[in-house]
Image 1: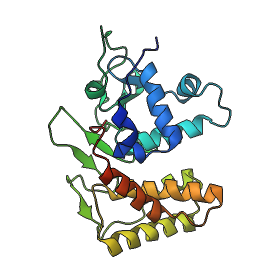
Image 2 (image 1 turned 135 degrees about the vertical axis):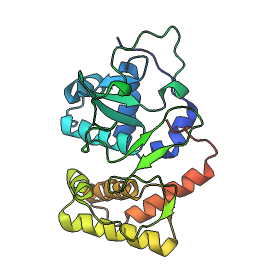
Image 3 (image 1 turned 60 degrees about the horizontal axis):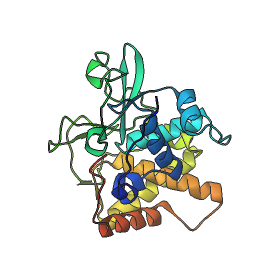
Image 4 (image 1 turned 135 degrees about the horizontal axis):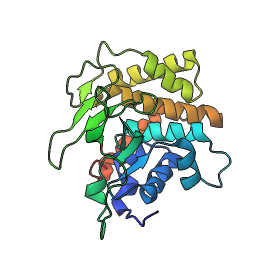
Length: 246
């Protein structure tokens, strides 16, 4: 049964939220109403579409897939597989939802995931993963092309290349091979010319891809990804509130 949930004021200016498209943000909020009281929901595209966007004919299951991809890439959700199927979990649920008279969990936890599967089981949805065990603990992030080493903010790696996974991500946003390579070069030049440091360069590339896709759809040759990302970083620095890694 759907439940009333809480939206904190700092949600709207949190860095993770600003990285997502408008529709992905709305999907994220909508999911809360239909998650169980542990912040979990079955990964069923048609069901999610019917719950959150029932009257929006311009949004199909592929659109839902892209939005879930954004949420997972920004560590707002994690996707995992259990014997019962695949599920979504809101990563910061217990920090942001205070539930009166919580009901028992309807869906299995990630701890019951199938042996050998990662927390984010589907690469098409999860370009990144981050495990959290509790408040105050170190966060672990694994780039999709990384060797498993833990990383904080770091310069653009010499060995970072346009992988098949990243190119497939660009393809889902309607970019051709040449456009995907062009976005990658924009990212590289932006990073090296300004000495940028990022926790996840694959996730930053995804941000560039989404921005370029929007620019392409609008036929706007002015708003390049590098300009918009600089603007988002400026907004994040000016905002004193964060969403506490939702």
